[in-house]
Amino acid sequence: MFAEPSLTHRREDGLDVPLLLWRFPEPLLAASSAVLGGGVGIREWLINASVAMSYARPDPEDHLAALAAGLGLTGPGIGLLTGVDVADAVHVRDGDVQVHATVGLGAPIRAASEESGFDHRPGTVNIIVWVPQRLADGALINTIATVTEAKAQALADLGLDATGTATDAVCVLCPAGGPPAAYGGPRSHWGAPLARAVHRAVADGGAVNLATGRSWSDRSGL
Image: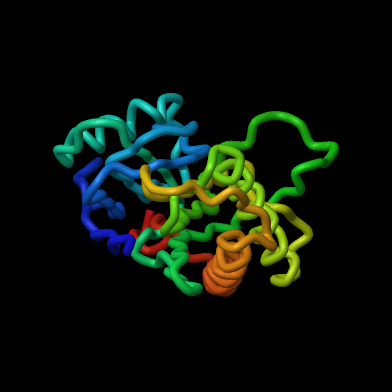
């Protein structure tokens, strides 16, 4: 079973800023698009940290590494940032698949559009997925596509003409050992519950975010 994260804080600019922390009981295999610890490999911890909506640091990887060091984390891990208050994370289970998502939809975009330039506004949809069987390399990458398809479906169901935001991140975790599952698509053994759980998490979290505009900045009066 994938452990629940702990909600903790770090002190920055005179404020207690929240973050979610997972310390894995044993190293896990991960595929992630995260700015810190992205790629495919063994990971030992994960953090998802709130930041102000005005966040514009040019070194988010270094920032996350410093946050991890401040928490006493060592070894390879994953770091995510979001403008959403991570205390509002949505947790969904479908069978043995688990999804944790922070859903910020203040700056939705269509992936293929005439717009150009880098938009780094930190609204951000961060999706963390746990699958309880080791996934073969191809299946692990396939789950990233399945997560993204389910997210886009949820945004359409919310009435948004968007596929996500410019800063969304995905992390899929599974055991590092054992016989591998060969497939991760939306009709595979693990891909189907994964897609349902991601869709529900993004739909539920997105509905709250769209109705309230809730961000950590809003809650902190910044």
